[in-house]
Length: 390
Image (cartoon, rainbow, N blue to C red; front, side):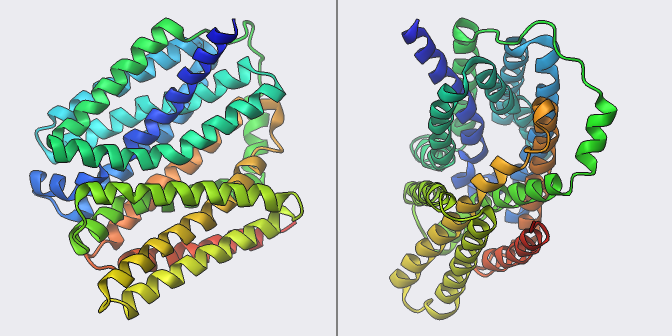
C-alpha cells in the first residue's frame, strides 16, 4: 500500500511538472524558430503569450469539469488534448498554425496543473499534504529550468522540430502512466454551491484581486525572462545553445533561495514586511542589470557576471514574495476553494499571458528592453503592495 501511494505521488508530481517544462523547453530555439517561420523576434514571443492564454482558460475549465466528470476523466482528456496540440506544433506549416497549436497544447496542459492539485487535496490529510506540496514546490522551481536545458540539448543534437517531438513523447508517457496508475478521488455526491453568492464574494474581495495580481505579475516576469533571455544571451552575448540552457540553473537556485528566505522571514516578520524585502531585492536586481548594461559593456566577462548576478537577485526577490501571495489569496474563500481556485487561476494566468505579450512589444533587439520592462512592473508591484496594507 505504501509503495502504491509513493508511485501515485510521483505520478502527480510528474503531472504537475510537465506543463512547466512545456512552457520553456523550446525557448532556446526562439531565434531559430523566428528564422524558420520568417517572423521577427517580437512576433515569435507571442507563442509564449498565447500559451498562457490557453492555460488560463484551461485552469478554469478543468477545475469545473473535474467536479462534474471526475478527476481521472478530466485529467486524461486534458493530457490527450495536450498531446494533440504538441503534435500540431511539430507539424505546423506556418506561424499562425503554430500559435493555434500552442493554444491547444496549453489548454490541455492546464489539467496537469489544476486537476493534480485537486487530487492531492482529495487524497492526503493536512500533515501528509505539507510533505507532498514541498516536493511539488521543488519541482515547480526546477522544471522551468529543466525546460531550456533539455530543449537546448535536443535542438543542438537534432533540430528545433524534435523539441516538439519530445513533448509528444512526454504527453504519451503522461497519458499511459495516468491510465494505469491514476486513481479517481472525487467524493460522490458533490456539494451544491450558491454560485451567485460565491461570485459576489469574489468580485467584492479587494485582497483577492490584489494577491492574484501580484501572483500574475511575478509569474509574468519569470516567463517574460524565458522569452527574452535567448535574444540576450544567444544573439547578443553569443552563448552556445547548451551554455544558455545551463543559465536556467541560476534561476532554479534563486527560486530555492527566495522560497527558503520567505519561510525564514515569515517566522519573525509580517507578510507585509516580507513583501517589502522581496520587492527591494527585485529593485536591487534591476539596478545591477542597468549598471551591467550601461557601465560594463567594454568589459565583456565582467558584464556577463553582473547580468547573471542581476538575474539571480531579481528572481530571488520575486520568488521570496510569491509564497506569501499564494498562501493569502484564498483565505477568505475556504468554503469553496475549488471554484475560487479556478477563478484565481484564470485571472493570474490571463495576466501572465498579457505580461508576456507586453514583453514582446517591448522587445527591440537591445539589452535595455528587459530592465526597463522590469522597472515598469516594479512600480506596479509597489503600488499593489502599498494598497494591500491592512
